[in-house]
Image (cartoon, rainbow, N blue to C red):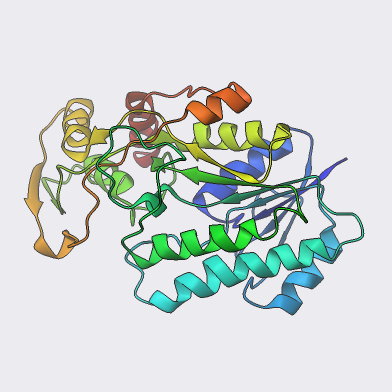
Length: 297
């Protein structure tokens, strides 16, 4: 039975990834802080090279899916973005390169936030990155450092645009909106609801990751996106219809970022050309599933 190592296995994406790999016939070992559906879940501080070496040597994986990251843009400890996202990733790659039997596939998850605020209809991988916050800067720095390992390890870098789905924490915007409706709240405090994002379903993102892992492409960057963008105002309108009432939106200036990215929409043509992947879930279906899950239906 092939072995897959998933970092960030206890997180939102990690739980879906573990389940998908189990269905693919892998023995899955997760690195995470909480129990998962993996055969084994190990606690491992990625910023501790010795601990990472010990875990990697113990697992000796065939596939590696590196999802672990500090991903909440509003996190107060700015230095932690670089400690975890850059140096944690480098520790993992160094440990993997030391194995006698190296993995056949390694997927490293970056972020479309590295693009910043380009005034472009659809952002493809040829657009020059221009990050505007520490999270995005740390991810771009990670990409550059990961690229120095391309000749040593079979790595593919994925740049997912925004995605959501059932069980995502309400620290993130879409689940926050959905949960307010599930609780029948009369009002919600938000920032700028006219910003527009390319939203995918987490299950489509997992399928894209699997498609890339099954492909022999490496040493490149690939966008993961739906190919269309939706304003937050439209999501609220969809939820009004779904829940059967109109919520009152109050704009809280504290939630409006000075460097807010007004629009992000990604081209998924490279992903489709490489793998034949296509999204299976519409935004309406995603919201319906999230709403049902939040209500315990």
